[in-house]
Amino acid sequence: MPVVREFTLPDLGEGLTGAEVVRWMVEVGEVIAVDQPVVEVETAKAVVEVPCPYGGVVTALFGAVGEEVPVGAPLVTVAVGSSETSTGPAALGAPVERPLVGYGIAESSGGARRRRVGAGAAVSAAAPAAAPAPAPVPVAAAAPAVVPVISPLVRRLARDNGIDLARLAGSGPDGLIMRADVQRAVATGQSPAAATVPAAPAAPVGDAEVIPLRGLRRTIAEKLGRSHREIPAATCWVDADATGLMELRQQLNRTAGPKVSVLALLARISTAALARFPELNSSVSPDGSEIIRHRAVHLGFAAQSERGLVVPVVRDAQSLGTEQLGEELARLTGSAREGSLKPAELTGGTFTLNNYGVFGVDGSTPILNHPEAAMLGVGRITPKPWVHEGALAVRQVTQLSFTFDHRVCDGGTAGGFLRFVADCVEQPGLLLRQL
Image 1 (cartoon, helix red, strand yellow):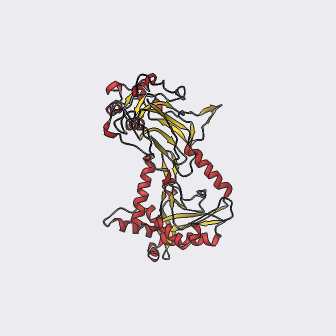
Image 2 (tube, rainbow, N blue to C red):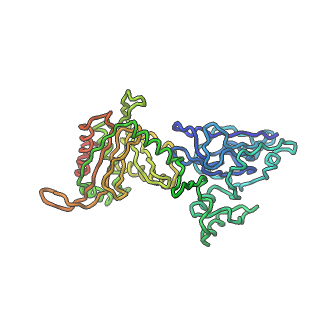
Image 3 (spheres, helix red, strand yellow):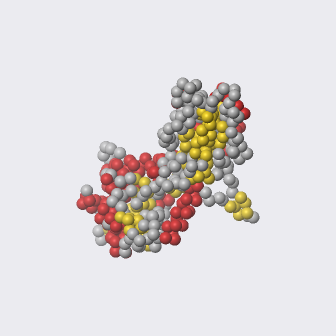
């Protein structure tokens, strides 16, 4: 006899209480393997694919696209068979109860073809004829339209190229849409996919437009609002001659080894400055009664992604050299652009480096990344007239700003930190004292 297993939204970590359904990767009646991703959800931190620990026939999906699903609420139900009739844990109908293997893109085992049975025969396909009827589909009316696609990778290829899968005729068995079908549509210039329209479109109000604040954007808004309300922040700034820093970078990159970015040098300067002013690597307790001074520097840095501004975190940055910092910054930046950052890579920061100079601006007074107590901002590095060694010269100048929680320090400490950073930008050799 088959058994219907209910798979609930697992705890995705970092204190998250729910997630929003972005897209379903399976449909009712489909045969799935153990640990196959079944849904893509957006948490307050990242977009992740959630694998199901059961193998069998999908009998129900819970939650429409755009709907918030709480942790512990049902996601899918799967009809699995008895252990007496199965040949192994990956076999159709095998009861599998084990923890999730992790989140991300899962590879199909053995290249097995995606299988599907009719919704009305979902359970009978995996069990004797006397099996009970399948459970009702809770989202039958609200679930997104499904198309016969062999793998999530094909869906992603279509989405990245603006191809509407509902308009394609699959060349695979049973009309399955293959990678070649999508590539052919790209080559022939098929019109952009209708599926790329948001699930919950903005509603017009008169001559205005109302855009739902949800997902990452809502989380950012809540966090920045809380920071503005709770933290008495102040900002100081100074112009610095970065010509020496740029010359050092050129020298380093003329030697063998990984290329060193300006951001990596600024990160190294930041960790050195925090070693001298450790009170700035702090946060204030939620009730405001204690200052929590962190021993490790978990360095956040602002990065632009398709989902907006995110702040990946370099763990234990104080223990990394310049090249190591550069490699980790490059890795996290690449993941941000691909949208593949894990929730753990977006939380736990103790200090933020904000290089807003990449937007071509000189200065900013950013809002602190709650609950952190400080943020270093760096404007564009651009040629400007500057008095150098008693004479007017054209130098590479940048504006540095420092925003801090006035509860953890006074202006003297903040000014000392910023002046040390500026001195290291102007005379990078000062970093040798910190090694």
